[in-house]
Image (tube, rainbow, N blue to C red; front, side):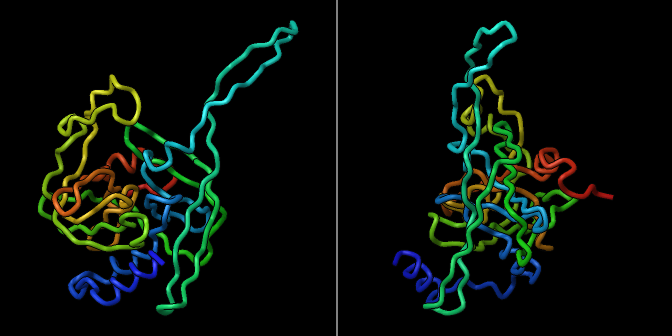
Length: 246
């Protein structure tokens, strides 16, 4: 009922997207819900690769005890960190009362708590829409678009804004070390922008006017300010997973 109510609200009071470039509108289809409270972006439909924020899947890691039997017969007790499967899913709307859900089980391919990024892997998504990762970073004053799932129910919400700063950092926000090592200086950067995001948008894409991913939204105060992992860090994290820029 909550999702139907949210959908009804969006249908009755739709945001004005007349000025939004068509590549951006198309890129919204690459947005998925991660577990029950975050956002993620399909990067490769053939390999089933999704990009999201580390803090969205942090609870998927658990510590288990493992016994290793040595050659001399002694047992070495160890504690190791392993990940448990999760779920990415999206709602498909044909009409007000024609709603279907597509869900895929993911495993964590790689993650980096320092950059607050995670790469998820599922089965191939043959009919999925994937987003291209940009080669040119967002510039101060440029138009950007945030895609995500506010509050976990307003799926694939699109908002527009402007890049306010490209020089913010976790240290500036006094949240260095929040995701892991408390000694982390927090020097890694953040892009500040004005596209509205809310809880549930974490892990969602920040797009340029060409519908290309230029960041991953990770922090914000609804309607006030928002922050995204910059393109440079996204490309560093993904490495050979995506094509190199010419």
